[in-house]
View 1 (spheres, rainbow, N blue to C red):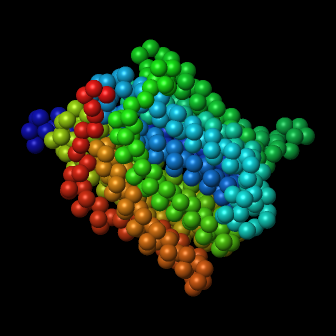
View 2 (spheres, one colour):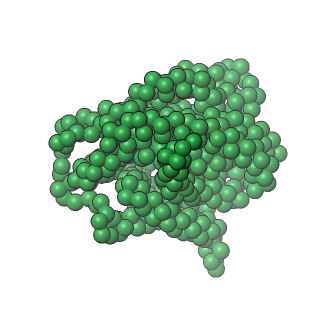
Length: 455
C-alpha cells in the first residue's frame, strides 16, 4: 500500500468516525429512552409494558412516513451540501419540515380521537386496550414535535455538528429517566404516580425540549435555519427529484415497518408472555444495532457529498470500504447480542414462560442483527446516497410480505406452531435478503449526481 492509499484510508475512517460515532451514540441514547421506559414499566406490571409496547406501534408507523421524508431530503441535502449550494440546502430543509409536520398532525388527530380502535388492531385483550388507549391520548402532543426535530438533526450532521445532536439526546435521556421515576411511580408524599401514562407525559416533555434545543442551536452563527423565504419556496424540478427518491423509500419503510408492526400483531394474539418477550427483544435489538445505523447515516452523507461533486471513482472506492465495514459490524453485533441474552433476562419481572421465550428470542436475534447490520449499511446508506432507493423497496416486499410474514401467519393461526418457531419464521426476512445484496451493489446504479446547476 503506497502513501496516497494510506492517507486515503486514514481520511475515510477519520470522516466515518466523526459522523458514525456521534450518530451511533445518538441512536443509542434514543434507544435507551425506549429501554428505560420498558424497564420501568416492566417493574410496574407485565400488562403495562405489553400495552405501551403495542400502543407505540402507532408512533413507529408515523416515524416510517417521517423517516421517508427526512431520508429523501437527506439524500438531496448531502449532494447539494457537497456542491456548496447553501441556498438550496436551506430550501430543502424548509420543504422537509413542512412535509414532516403535516404527517405528524394526521397521526396526532388519529391517536387523540380513536385510540381504542387503533389498539384493537394489535390485541383483543380488554386490559391492554384500556391501558394502551389511555397512554395514546396522553402521549399524543409529542407527535407534533418529532418530525421537525429529525429534520434539524440531518442539517446539524451536514454542518459538522453531529456532537450537538448527541448533547440533545443526552438531555432527553436524563430528563426522561428522572421524570419517569416520579411520574410512573410517584415517590413524592401521597402522590401515587400516573402508571403507564406517566411515561407518556415524560415523552411529551422531552420531545418538546429536544425541538426547542435544536431551534436555539440553529440560530447560532453560520447555521442553516428556516425562514419565510424558504418556507414559501417551491421548485417543480426539485420536488420531482424529491418524490422520485421519497416514494421508493416510503414503500420500503412501509413494507418493512408494517411487517415489523405485524410482528406485534402476531405476538399479541399468541398471548401476553409472547408479547412481553418479543417487546423486550425488540428493545435489545434497537440498542445493539445503534452502531450500524450510525455507520449507515455516515455512509449516506460521505458518499452523497462525493457524488454531489461528481467524484465517482472515489465514491466507488468508499462503497467498497463500506461493504467490508458492514461485515465486521454485523459480526460484532451478533456476538454482543448472544453474550447479553442471559443478562437482559434478569432485569425484568416476567413469568417463567415469558423468560424462556425471551432467552430463545435473544439468541436467534444474534443471526438476525448480523444480516440487519449489512443490509442497513449498504442498502439504507450507500444505495440511497446516489438515488438508488428502488432496490430496498423491492427486497423488503419480497423477503417480508412474500416470504417471512406468510409463513409466520400460517404458523401462528393455521398450524399452531410453537411461539419460538413462529418468531424465527417472522424474523427470517433480513437473512433472506443477503444473497441478492452484493449482486445489486456490483451494478453500480447508485453512482449518480442528482444536483442541478440552476436549482
